[in-house]
Image (cartoon, rainbow, N blue to C red; front, side, top):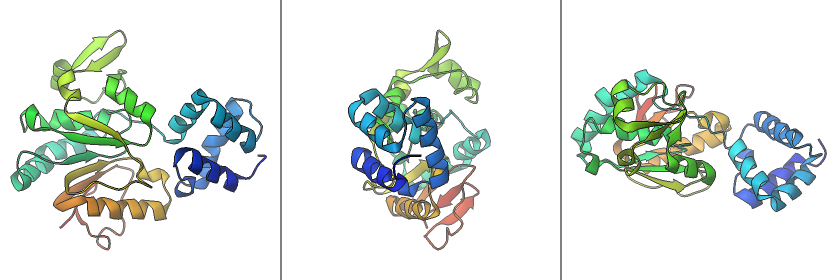
Length: 258
């Protein structure tokens, strides 16, 4: 394609603070080329100009490259483990006011799932989830809290009945769940990480990062955890060098800071 991709990456960094160097190039380039072709734009230079002048195009670009695929209770067996083992252990260790961070939370499915599971163990008034994502459009969707049937397919029936209201073909999550989540914009590759968290959840996002970027984020998560805190990652991910960077492995997808 016309125009230099290296220069394109610099322009995108300046425009969005998203560092495309941290994503697998072949995969990301293919996604961007598809988007450019869709709009019948010829070359990266013309596309950059369009992004600078067209807010809709710019918002679409950010949403597209930040890969928002999410659903409630993804991998139900892992949520069973968090319900039966992880939360009881963390409550015993840290008490009722757990500090929980849902990183790269996408459309809110994950932090809202955390609230529902935690509501089995604690009063709602004790629950507060800090949820972050790079994409402000996605955060806006999360705050609305309306989902399609596929998104909530794995939600246990008790929670579907209790916390969702059918609105046309969609399902709206209850305000009492939404009120327990605080959303913020945050760039995992660039921004400062918060501190002393008892549980950090970041699932199926880092698979898109280079090995170097992945390693750096896992190290930063480790520093963000309180001693005894747990990192919950996705079923497609693993931390090969977990011992070297300061974790004990509790389970395939749960890593603990000693």
